[in-house]
Length: 179
Length: 317
Image (cartoon, rainbow over all chains, first blue to last red; front, side, top):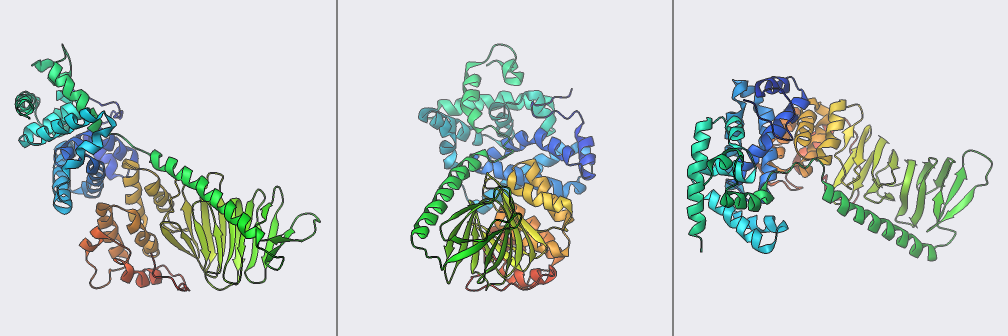
């Protein structure tokens, strides 16, 4: 099955897009960017403050574009760029310190109480083990379906289903225990 | 808990999942191809700047004498030469007009150009270009002649150049001799054979040689105009197509790039013109104007442009 988000209208598969990008087809790179930016954003948001996430997303794609030649199997682009994103987030966090408390300010486009509740929910997701954290970020923040998460991260649909189910249980417990 | 809804949003929505989705949507990734907010803010600044220029012009006008003036000559037709006094506004309409000053040199104005002679003193001659195009050929000392625009000032360093400003404040500076400094909160030092663009957002691009690859020239402008994939592609295109003399463009990108982008700029610039001893790759992560100062002399040499004559200015950035 192939799934496409609204901003991902290029019918080519990842491997074709990778090959085309290597041939300096900027349209192909933009298609990869549109397809994977929400995934990368979700992964990074699990590790960094919201206001830093957009910049780091861009940095991930710079790295991807300049190191694409090192990707041996173009069809494995999904798992590869997710690893690049995790490494970029960790590098950024080491270099800038922890500024996660600014999430509430970032969410202030909602009402004040909603901002606090949203920031608390985000913090609770971040506190989950990595597998659950990333899967729930992609589902609840980025709005992806389980099938999309599986395709974009390289996980099996079964693993995603388990991560969603167990992760939601842990998240609910954490939010209920919140003072 | 409804696992179907959690999986693909099918079936009856689970209230707890639905609530979390509603709360967390504010953090969702948003495509942002153009920095719209910045444009709006800059637009307000543009009007403020324009108002300030006009106010300055009016104040100075009240204090002027006929001695502080330029001669304006319509190049087509038989209209008499007249003296342009400080604070006066000149609109060329359909004609080409030449402004001449013994102290500065000759300025040719294209049809459809509007400017104010804002200042005309011993230490500074200043034109405020509202819109249109001027071609300046100066013989004055560096720093004596300045053209204000809504977003930037063009400071002459003994040169010949063409400056075009559109109605929205955007524009283009093309230098054919010497150097011109284009400045606002950023700075672009533009040498002979190079150009720099003033974006509608008020940003100044890095200077780029007009005989550089089209991918580089377009990339320099796009890099500062958009975000997302187009910005990334633009940067990569600039780096890939940079020749040795385009090191001048690359060194100007440090101030316009984020830390990760600076590393890639460093790598390519270092290939073209080796970094000076003591400057390490990681130093550009915390870039400030002094970080790459020692690199400038070898970059200017590689660009094959004459050394700049710059009085009383602190550095290259």
